[in-house]
Length: 253
Image 1 (cartoon, one colour):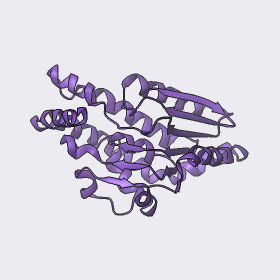
Image 2 (cartoon, one colour; image 1 turned 135 degrees about the vertical axis):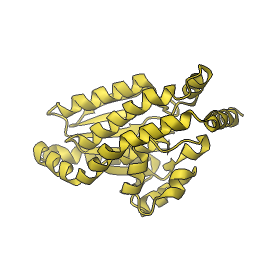
Image 3 (tube, one colour; image 1 turned 60 degrees about the vertical axis):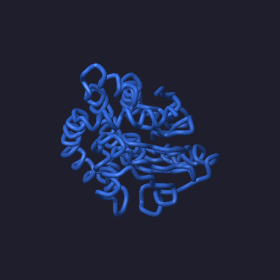
């Protein structure tokens, strides 16, 4: 995953731009740096997070997971990546800046959390979430076990344990997204919402966000570490290697 960062019209636009946008340590550190900089830039009033490709983010990098397995350290990838994505999720939740997330394609696994952490969540008609953990015999990570039930009505064991698609219509109906747009209208609409914050008092907006996110932050602070320990344990089970190889083989055909 690579990230293009552009500051314009009082907002910071962060666009993931690498095919399926799988998580890598370098790209996540880059993303976190820009989020931190925006927090202290008084000319920035909001953040847009989206993808410049047809996929929002597939989450975990399967080939890097397999490298760890073949090195005899199957949890190597998640032990490096999950703390980094957790830092980003917490930074966006705690930021005084409103975050607008724009879902232009599929967000899978941990990629769902990058979308659901948005304070205002837009989806195109092609946007969808994919709870891919079950395919790999993994448990939810990156805050997804917290964000999915918090953002969406009626989400529970079924969606978290199985690999389930949630389309744009269902996302809006169940509260996961605030509105749906045609694909060509998605980014212009996100920019329109972002620019609306430029005329507001930055401190007052930040305080309002802090109050609105209090319960969510309590849950993230309480359960992120438990999620992390669970997925590390899951990677060390034999079923993970078997499922991982099956998924990679299926995708290569």
